[in-house]
Length: 447
Image 1 (cartoon, rainbow, N blue to C red):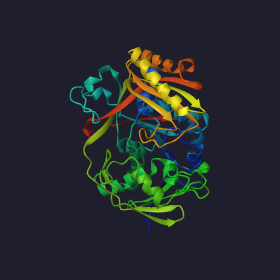
Image 2 (image 1 turned 90 degrees about the vertical axis):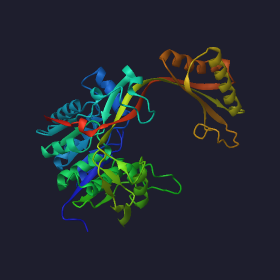
Image 3 (image 1 turned 120 degrees about the horizontal axis):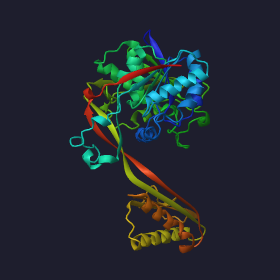
Image 4 (image 1 turned 45 degrees about the vertical axis):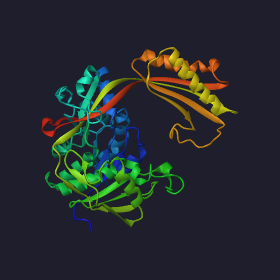
C-alpha cells in the first residue's frame, strides 16, 4: 500500500544523444510531477569545457535546444518540472538558451535555474592531490589539465526547487541526486535520514539510464526477448513519502519492466552494492527486492543507506596526446593470412622509421578484436584490419595512418576501403576533495 502522498517522476534521457520522443510521450501522458534528463557522461564535461574555452556562450549539452523545443510546451501545459545536468560545463549559458527557447515558444515567465559551483579547478592542490586511478600527483600533468568538476549532491537543486524554479539545469551532479532532490523537496526528508536517502538513491540509480530499465541494453535477441524495441518506452516511478516506490512505463510503449530488467540495471556501474558512494549518502542496495505487482510494474523495496563520507569525487580532464586510427579490408581467399601479413609489414615500417607510438593495437575485426588471443579456428571470407595507437603529437599520428594507406600498393593483394582518423585524446582521472570546500550556487533567468 502506497502512502497518501506520492509523486511521479519520469526519466527522459540516459545520455546526451538519447531519443527525445519517449520523453515527450512521458510528459504528455505520464501524469508526471517531474521529468529528469541525465545527459552528462564522464568525459563529456571536459569536452564541454573545451567548447566553452573557444566560445563562452557554449559548453552545454549539444541537444539542449532541440530537447527544450520538444519538451517545454508539454511541461508547461501539464505542470511538469524539468531537472537536468544538460548545463554541462556552462549551466548559466544553458539557462539563458532555455529562456530564449521559452520566449520563442511564447512560454512567458518560466523560471529557469542554473546550478553551478561544481567547477573546482581553481581549488586543485597540485602537490597534495593524487589520482585515485594511477596514484600520480596532479603536478605530473601541469598545464595539460582542462577541467576539474566535483560531483555535487542535491543541495543546489533543492535551493532552486524551494525558490520555485520550473526548469533546473546543473553542471556535474551525481546522477542519482538528480532524482533524489525532488523527493527530499516534496517529502521534507531530513538530510540526516540516511535510510530514506538510500531508498531515494536506489530509485535514482534504477531510473538514471532511462530506457535501460525498460529492456534497452537488456535484450540479447535470443534468451532475453524484449518486445517492440523500436518504440522503447522510458520509465516512470511512483514514489511514496516513506521511500516506497514502483517502476513502470506507459502502456502503449515498447519494451518491458520486470524483475530481471530491474536487477540488471541495479548492478549497472556499481562497484559495491552494499556501499554505493554518493555525495549525500552511502547507499546500500544489498537487500533490495523486486516484486512484479502487475504487467510492466515492479515494486522495489529493501534499500537503505549510511552516513556520507564527507568527500566528493572530482573528475579531472586533461590532454593526453592523440589517437591514430586507420583501417583496411581484405576479402576472399586467404583474407586472414593477408591481414596478418599486413600487420607484419606495419610493424616493420614502424621499426624502420623509428616511429614512437604507445599502446598500439592491431585488430582483425571479426576475428580477434574483442577476445584477442582467445581465437577459435576460423576461416573468414572477409576481415578488416584496424591499427590504432596513441601518439604524443599529431605529426606522429599522421605518419602512422599514412603507413596503413600505403598498403594499397605496397602490401598484400586486394586491400580496400582505407579509412583514417586522428583525434585528440581527452582523458579523465579522479581525485577526492573535502565536501565542505564546495559550495553550490544558483542563478535564475526568466523566459
